Length: 264
Image: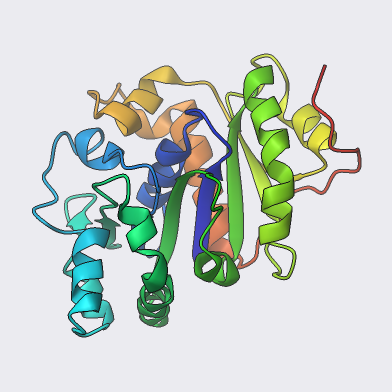
């Protein structure tokens, strides 16, 4: 199973959402930073400054150029642990370290996806943090393998206006595949509700994540966890989303019926 998390722009919490889902995933999982805009957000934030030590997509590109093995074991050598190593296994593949790295990687996505296929055959699912959409869109090799494409947005008007502009690009990218983009609203009701947003944009609603700054700071900044973290509203919602996505391939949210306007 391959899940893509992406945003249309700004900082709506796509990395925190992908990370939170990975940390709650019911099986072995690999979280992959495929954001074309380098940030190292997981390493510097949740993992509190852990060094990638030369591991990540850049090192994989070097191995591809050198015609080294494309085995899933070679891929896992480029990852770091997301937790203490307990079962199930949760790993993280660091992303690009230079603004032009994504462009230079463009010829290698198929090889990377082939390694993802090997991982999935061994019982390890893949969650992609695709970051913010740019003019080049999502790599087609990733889109073609995706069982779910989760589009993360906040509920305010600027975020929704940006998302509306990106909808034609998303529709074109997914026109010939089973996985339609579905909404994950971060902080619904600030001011617009998640169901209202889904109706206006005519998209499936996959999840409505509650506004919970203390829990979000753990994921984004590596902040000290509040008491009873796993019982916090956001953590419970992320766990529910992980179980929903991990429980049935090609999951769909609730399909809505209105046109693609922006709430006014």
